[in-house]
Image (tube, rainbow, N blue to C red; front, side, top):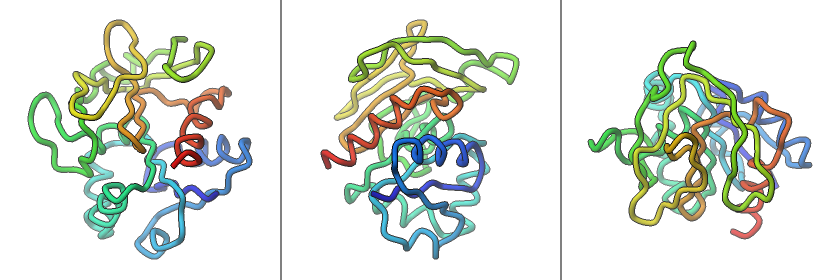
Length: 190
């Protein structure tokens, strides 16, 4: 198994570390040539979503990524990755990768000072897991084929739609590999 990690911004190295600890090979995607490599899945890490969308357009990566996700490529988006995959933002159509039936509220937890850490349950994972939120979004609602997997303080912070998984928090910044294992299992069950 080999998972591509979008390496334009954010904690992509930390995602690589988590996957390596699970025995999974990775490679970084920085341009269209990188994207052409064979892959079993994709991780879109955090960062600044507006900047990442601009870079995806500039590098001619947005359409190929969107197409492969729509064709069934498993994808896991954290924080900004969640924003990029959402079809809606605060009830309005979003023009990003936009492959998931979720409505997102960007920077929902405010500025950097609004960042926090908690422990909560996640459907499909046996034990409660640590959740680190940094200028995080949350999901206003899931609709269509999407389903909520975790909530914190009444807000949806993780969801799944078939082969697509998103978290508002950063599991790559904690030692617990449960969410990454959950994603690897999505790929294996394919």
